[in-house]
Image (cartoon, rainbow, N blue to C red; front, side, top):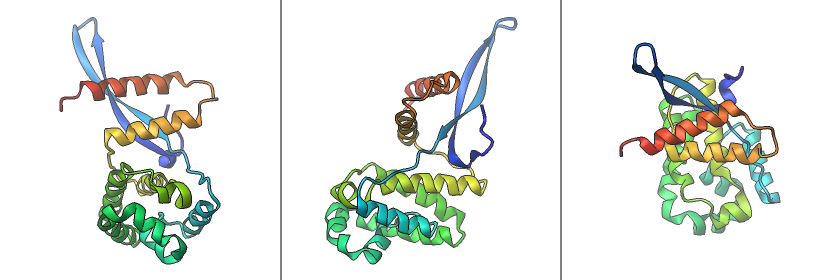
Length: 194
């Protein structure tokens, strides 16, 4: 079932093979799996302060800018991210360029965010910042959706978004269509040649 506003969803195409009994043929169709983006709620006061600052500017949470705006966390940030600081510098440049209108930079920022998300959580994100990488992932997906741009995420990232959706909706009634598409998507991922 397609939502009215696609902006708040990551859309993953799922291949479905259907056996046509009369003709004895197998036909492949594509159905869209709409994974709702679940917002991040920081658990600490410092995280809420940082998130509120960047949300107020309608910008992704830029690690380089956190150190400029909140220098009291600079040491913790550096200690947690020094091994990937060059990637965060490049990501910061893509954020700035994307905010200035570069669609290529928005896509690159999304892919850098996917990569850097694999190194979370850190001491800085757990104690001070909050899950800013997931926030940025959601932010960039929504931004690209709003601009009508196409993009694809890694299977691991899609799996992560599905897991967040299930965690947020664990007390809601099940959605059989969504569950079936997730099951088919997982099957396709397992069967995909490496």
